[in-house]
Image 1 (cartoon, rainbow, N blue to C red):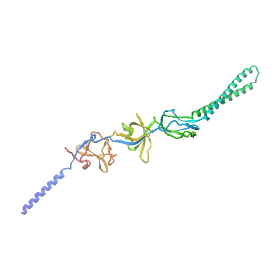
Image 2: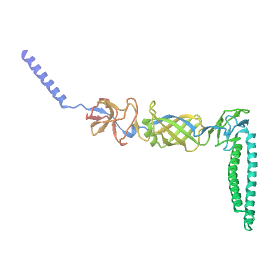
Image 3: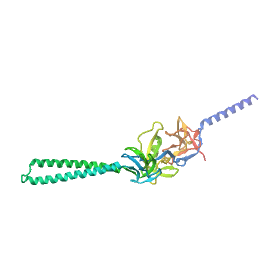
Image 4: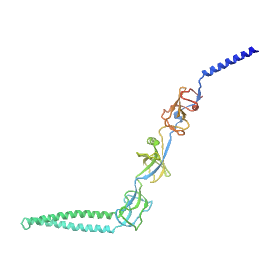
Length: 341
């Protein structure tokens, strides 16, 4: 009995040793599934708040003093360049024009008289009937009259300009946004009477995160989405300044075809031209997120330097790159894998 028991122990020990040798001789191989990078990527769509702004949102002011006779426009009216916005009672300006015109006629008469006197004096000098001194005096009088004439021209032009300013007209085509004065009020130079928004020269202003500026510049199509519809825009200028609080940069856009109404707000939308992978595919190894790439039976960890936990990430790899999908959580760099059937 003792001999039989000893034999069984010996046989059991040999079997255990054989199993141990067998387990050490085999390396761990993880079964995985593999996909092409092009099959798991997508193109991210980004957005940013934006507003259509008028380049001219002007408070049209009076340039002369006077009582307002009429303001023929109302809020919301569309006006053309040169249309009447406000008319002032400028009788005093009209009187100045009349006085300036009368003064000019008086001076012109002096000029004509001085010219005739000089002509007559020159003919009399030949017969020694008058002195040279008299001719010099007459020529001086003519020069003074001519100087007065030039000054009066300026006075008349100024009076006529003040008279024209009694009619306040639209400097550009636009929409009346506000009436800032009323009929019967007295206004002075510089006092605004109407606020006018340019209807034609519009831009879109958007606040874009500094991290998205590059993708915005590379986008093939940028759309302003509003409750009026969608409008195609193109970048005019990325403002060379960063807002310290929001870490944004202002970007200005031009409408390429139809324009939204001034003041329209919405969101700017564009699609990245670089492919991205979903947020749940990268795995973390050694404190860094990345992908496991299939390399002839060996898993190679490829770090994604700009990846953030829980966010899709753009990848710069060939479209036919083989990426390990199922089984990647169990892998480490240089592990062997076996592709599942």
